[in-house]
Image (cartoon, rainbow, N blue to C red; front, side, top):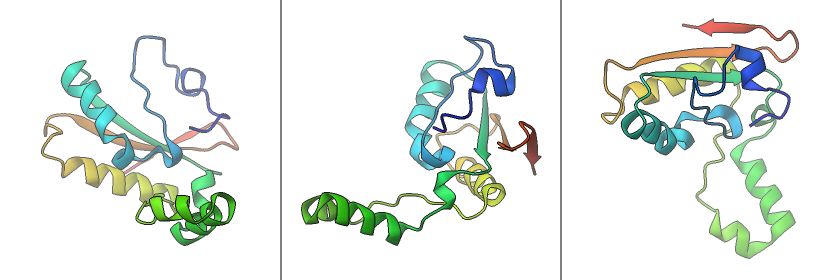
Length: 131
């Protein structure tokens, strides 16, 4: 979701080579529906999870996000999202590992689909493979 990262430039992706699913925090949980569409309906054969340094999702907790919504939008909005998990992260590398584990546990993701994880360093433009 980060506007500082242009996937085609950062990763050398040519238009038509990849489905890029973007959301706050690069969450596989939030992206699962789109991943399934990409895999099962459109035939992609690999999943690459990418988080990045300097991510806004590192700057708050669920409680803080709920408090901001309540303060800015009022009690009706707060009640509507009371159980919403904003999926904040505290460590991009661990968040990548957690997303890989989440996807590997999904029976809807075939076991022969290759899943890899990476952290993009906004400061340097480099990517690190996460084991």
